[in-house]
Image (cartoon, rainbow, N blue to C red; front, side):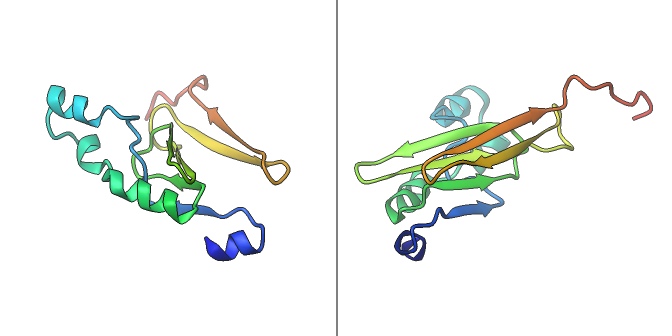
Amino acid sequence: VERSQKENKLLIAFSHYPMLDFLNGTVEDEQKLLGNTFFVRRSPHPDVGRILTDSGLKLHFSGHLHINSTAQLTTDSSFLINVQVPSLVAYPPAFKVIEFGNETMLRIETVCLDSHATDPIL
């Protein structure tokens, strides 16, 4: 993070697991209603997001859950956006397209393939 800031570059992190709550603050509600579900067990501890946000990381992409979700954490000193990337092998199939603009602009598009015919043999 420090090196990217010194060189005035945008650092984008990628990892398998999300760094922010992909259920947008509803983990406790899901746990109360449905129990210890897969999503509850895979939700990162809030400290993970705070530590990364305070480090200066701004943008993180994650997979694992194959869902389309975006979460943001803002602290007094910074912010972090976690883009949860969907999958072509999940339903509905989708993928992300990232377009870089100027130094402060980034466009992330989700392309859904749910309107395409499926193979009846599958």
